[in-house]
Image 1 (tube, helix red, strand yellow):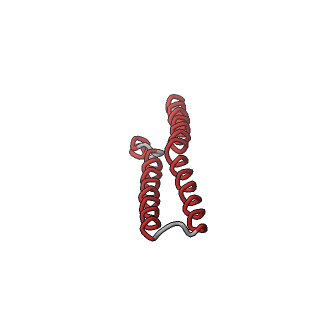
Image 2 (image 1 turned 90 degrees about the vertical axis):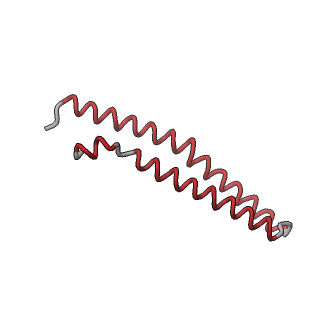
Image 3 (image 1 turned 45 degrees about the horizontal axis):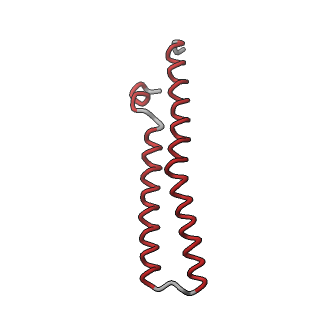
Length: 92
């Protein structure tokens, strides 16, 4: 059985992680995904109108790819932060 103080600490850490995760997902990943969706919608609309030249298509795809890479990295970092090293070291 864990001491009461350790249970309280674990609960407080868990609540902070949830709050941090919600904020991080909203402020970074969600905003980036909304931007990517908007870019893809604009790209499709332009493509359907046949007004986009090859260089514009290429540049838009490069920009979207770079942004997706950033979203992936942010998500990885957020996931790593969910399990503090202290808890891992304690075997919890």
